[in-house]
Image (cartoon, one colour):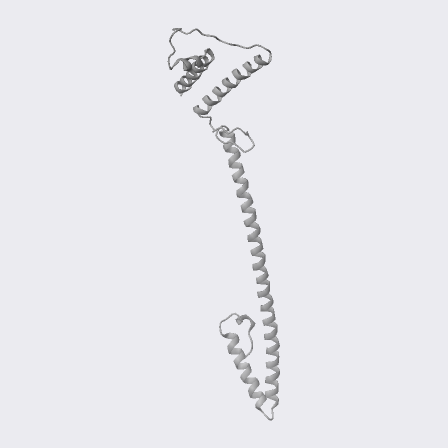
Amino acid sequence: MPFDCTKLSTAGYFTSWKEATSTAITIYQALTSTTQLQDNAMMELDKELIDASLCLSTAIQRLSSTSSDIAELNQQILQKTAELSEAEKDIAISKDRVAHIRHPEREVSNYESWFPIDRPISIFSLILIICLTIFLTVFLILLTLSYLGVDITMFTKQAYPGQISMFTPIFEQLTVSFWILLIAFISTVVYFVQRK
């Protein structure tokens, strides 16, 4: 039976052709004497074998190029995956930039400042900063005056010279600067609480 290259992908075609060809060759080899017709049939079979060999080599070459196509597609998939992950990183950076532009007080970058403040600044943080600023300012002013030779000392008379109560040492510590700072602190707290 002649070999049809177009039917090579058909299931069972190659196996049946091979069996028929093997049977014909075995029968030919078993003959002690051959006729011209049988020799011509073997010559035709030899041509079919060459055609089948060429057809099979073409199919193998096509399949091997298919595997290289698959490898190339896999390489493209890896490349596109890398590009996608890079694009996702760029999108995340863009979202952070947009959020920072819309609400700069909420989004804080690592490079913006070293001072640990919550954003937006809470009332407690703001009051704490103001109190620290007032305390350090008064402290630096008094320190500067002390270096310049100006010492501020306050003396108070006891209301009852003969009596010393257990609260006297505490009341002696409550100086004018303490009352000024206490009033400033209370007024700041009241202002920010009422403003909210």
